[in-house]
Image: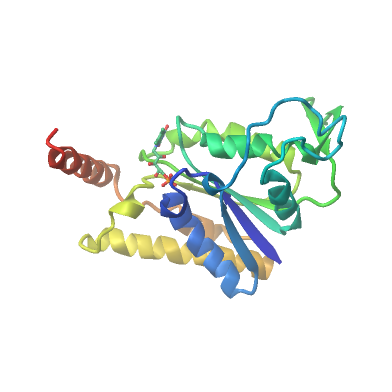
Length: 244
Ligand SMILES: Cc1cc2nc3c(=O)[nH]c(=O)nc-3n(C[C@H](O)[C@H](O)[C@H](O)COP(=O)(O)O)c2cc1C
């Protein structure tokens, strides 16, 4: 069994997204799965040209010569794929949006009508991997995840495999701010990491994550006020140090 997460943060290995994905994949690895995290920022992925060659001239294959052919194979060879991104402008990063656009060769061109009256393109392959989403926002609250539902909707249409886990981590920068001095925050992050590891284990062992584990993942890392104070203090110090 292979779990692959495509991380769309421009911060790559230093990202909060990776900070969340790492324990999830550790748990899956410890339970016997093969795991991989692909940092999209490190790969050569050009923009979709919109030429539809992958539907007409070269069905299932993109005309662009870059890393995407290899990544499409990896996507399809995985039992589970994860799409991870920080919230940027209430949506995903351009890196992840671009990656999603480049999944177009996986779809067939003809327009189909679904039972609910909306329209879609059928998948080109028989088996799609099951999906996970890992999002984190810089703001507290849930408001900044609302528009992301559009992305999730598109991902579900692109990949009819079922969704097994959705992580919406608000106060994402709290993961960077924990320096061990704030014992409460450190303890909450330890609990968060443990819940993510458990989610990875459950996925491999049972093919699903228990609602209790999902609940643990979404417990607050800080109150809105604590988080705002910590972030604002960080920026005061940062600006002060630069003589601003
Ligand atoms: C260009 C840009 C746009 C952002 N837009 C939002 C936003 O709309 N809402 C939000 O909550 N955070 C926003 N953020 C903050 C990031 O989501 C936050 O810093 C996140 O923890 C970064 O995660 P990463 O380390 O995985 O990239 C934005 C950050 C940048 C650089």
